Image (cartoon, rainbow, N blue to C red; front, top):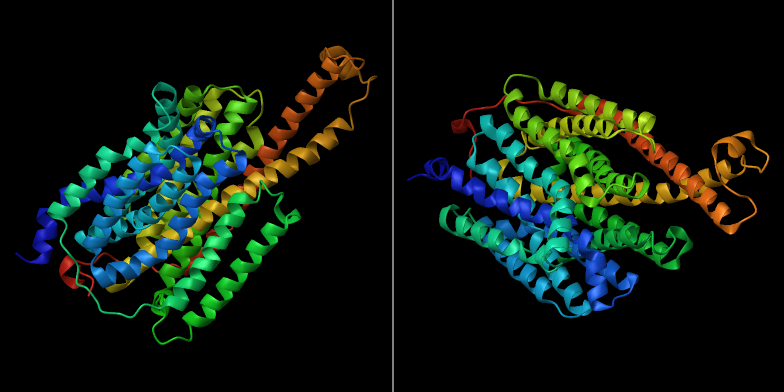
Length: 507
């Protein structure tokens, strides 16, 4: 049996196995956020200590992600993917059994390291086991796992924590991890291994840049950003590490990341697109739950229901995208997706208020899900459409590293702007409130002579100021999405070829 026949016969179980791995990683990136207060309470941990439960996972995943491409080429993709799934499963169980805050930080660090290869290697597997004409559908399935995971994680994490214990946020990974490992072990064939030297300096400088950046983004809000010496040091290390890495990459004989990756126009344009799209996608995911719960007073379950149309919209768009790419120019589909996403952000910036009906949230989030889903799948397919098969493992590692960086930057930037703009708008609104204002006297039952009255008035002003700050964040993301349209001119769509025209195995 040839490799192509093996892939065709076992395509369904392989797809299920690697898709499970993708969902595991994408869900676990955010599911622990909901359980943090419960973890901190049971372990008597400080806020700063609890921050490292998230930071350790994020930093480890960011550092090891680019390494997954080299490991797959050197030791075989099946071996690396299987060890990643098994390691992720074991460390998930250890996180659930942790008894001290130090233990859970250590196990989260290991869990993040093992999780790094799950998404990029799963993506590379799906590209290899499908002929080029089916890449759109394969990336649609992969994209559903990547995008829907963070959408479902808060609801799933809240339900598990409230109904059982925070430990089940980690235990839930174990049975699905075992199923994924069995599928990979049984059906996935091994790729050809390549003997190559390891560029330690390139890996070290990239790790320094990515690690310092992730720590800076994750701890910036706690340390008052650039008012802290720690943040300045981390930014300096990130810039210095990136400079050393770039100089070394384009001058070394065998660099850690192959420069030939960046000679592909579609891959370069796709990298820029994924950074900005991830900033918008994950920033919105981070902003909407506190908006609905803190400003509108929605319970956790109601918040999940209100955001469900977004996930449904993404699912529908991704399902259709794989089929539409076979009939339409991918650049047109990306343009339509960006237009729909832009329109949803414009509606958020213009019409979201403290008095908005839930129907508006449903409609706008569904629209954004459609736009993001259509854009995400199409641009991912086009980004790898002209990349040589032997570069896929390395390319997917770089692509997903930039996706993670984009999401971290987007969440950190919008959160910082939200805090700053809330303070600015509070000052502006408060300056117009005087004891003799007609609106205050007629429509606001607040007393200027009592602490309770002033506190109530301050809470109202803060609430309105925060809503305006949310609108400003959505407006910024609207402008960022519009800025992506010129990049469509750089894309060169290639018609799908038959499987006989392009090898499916990494050489």
